[in-house]
Image 1 (cartoon, rainbow, N blue to C red):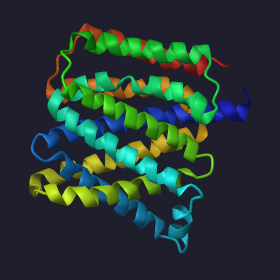
Image 2: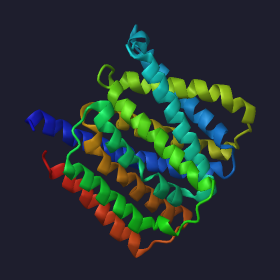
Image 3: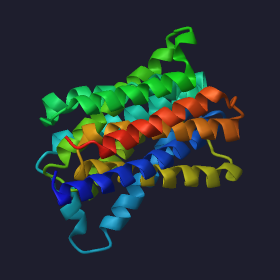
Image 4: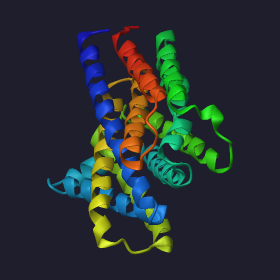
Length: 288
């Protein structure tokens, strides 16, 4: 592993940790708002906000919009956008049915899906230590949330759909980064998400109370920060190497659930959180 690769890997870890925090914050705000408003309406406004910001940034310089819109792989970028908005909508809907913490426990399988697909799709080397680190993190998830006690219903399958959608989005984000920069990928994801929700969302529109617009604004800002950092992380480091660190989103989401939604704070949360953190530290030190 060269000095440049080590430096990029360290930056990738930093980006992924901040991304998981902002995404967990977005999930918490989404759960709160989805208790009072239709999930599709919330995500339509969020998608519009994303698209407005990225288009506004692109228009700051002459020719910049054409530059970020230019891609040799439009079908791949469109697919990424559809997968992303599918994962977001199904995830937020699940928050209203199963709760924030329980949804994340069932979604925790997505890093394993990413690792298994990184080899055949991205031609990345999946070493034994990466598998062990991801499995150790998943074991920490089980300790925190004890999903074996769940009575499976149709609603409990929704997070699985979210996990599959987000796994494919993650893999395609890394694949897109081979030819497109982070700004182009982020632009396309925001644009396609906004277009999809503009078609679906108006059929379910309901007015948002003025007192809730500030929360919706913070939700949008957290989402923009999280997804941009996620895209940037996968641009500079291997997806399979970063997956153990994505478990931090569950840790952050559990903290939000306890602090805001008054979920029970148990010893298992601390024990599982330690295992998750140690798995991330292990994979960052192990050089394959």
